[in-house]
Image (cartoon, rainbow, N blue to C red; front, top):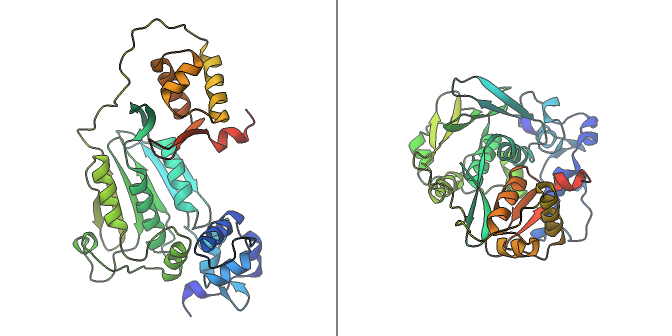
Length: 332
């Protein structure tokens, strides 16, 4: 029996995270594998992902679905560190969650807390632009979480430096592989088959070895250098570097008309109220409704987006602003 297929103790069933079960259940419903009106069932989900053995949750199942996988196998978490120009540690976070949820939670924390955004104005819309493409980073974190050497006892590490970001997982490339093989068209050869299969069945990754191709494409579209891939006998590291020619944000043109200066806090509250109402979509529409010019609106909306109060959902043409769940849950 594979080590990942060994049974855990009965307490593992009590530690399963409902969010992880919901994630898999939703994907199975999309594929019409289970009825659309069925309730998420931990036992059914685990069984469909081959994560049970004689009625017990397997080690793979515990790592993928339980709230604290490091209770079953040490080092099964993600560590994020922020480093200064002198390489001094400035801040850090540890993401302890089911393996299926770790990449999404880690990337959300990364872009909310550690990676600065710039608010740009173009085509009548405000958008948050980050130094690194989110989809490429998410793909790199998923790869690191899925392909890590689980026997090493070491977490996935994400290091954010002023000029670069590195994502490292323990474990070498497959036998006989080089970085050149990784960058060329290749078959998927997961180190942890049960883990990789579960990520695929949950709709989080493909099983066709397309992850690297996706990273390169996203970086090219974002105008930053392709990531470097460093592999040795112990680990694999992906290095994202900032472009030396990062374009300046495209800000709204200066407006010359006289405008009435409004109380900043009151203006924030009014913008939040209009976003919650949901009837307006573009900057000009908001500015007109508020009785201010678009530059004032851009400045205040930028602040609210940087603080995580308001987020942009969807694309530039059909998207809209909405109140973040974190802000809504505070009752403010």
